[in-house]
Length: 100
Length: 203
Image (cartoon, rainbow over the protein chains, first blue to last red):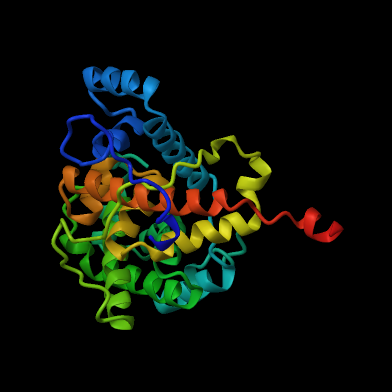
């Protein structure tokens, strides 16, 4: 928060309860494509003249996309082998059965 | 995997078929490990959570009624195991029965740097990814699990709600807060300008 002291909070005249520019839960739903049509049109119209909301929508979408693109961590073979052992399934470990 | 496939496997599991147990592990250990690693942030704890999850699942399989998929059911067991372990590690930080509207701090947007316009190379570099990981680690565990399931693992809102024993609206509310916090942190990070190795090397 201290690093943002020089930035004005996202205040806006829009009459919604969040105290911010546009209700934040709508923005999250919008990004998921789950916002009701009417609210969707309202938000899109709002974004045409509200740079801040547009940036929040864009960067939230991008944030999700970046996380989605993270390479999935692979489970190391040794971890899997120990798991089979702990579960008393060592005989059924694919490696024991000569599977590729 | 369809619920029909699940049903056949569950019947074999409940009959004590060892091959079915191995099949369950083969099919789902990867997803459990990914969740555990992202929740715990280190491999040793993730491995413990992985083992605890399958030990618990094997014990509880007789009580599995098929109200959710096996995958969702395992996510739930794994998440509970992760929260228990986090609570053991940091008793003051984690409660497994936090109220839905726990105070996660202010989520009002303050950063308005549009980092979407940055080159993909800057967004994907190792340092940026390390920052992304740090940002997730800093979420409260309850926000973290929602974000991991919904936005990283790609579960639906409904599946996430089932896995976490939450209402759909509670999932949406937590997801929104998690996304705003991460967006805020990444915006601040990218606004500083990335550390470009080439520039460093030539200076």
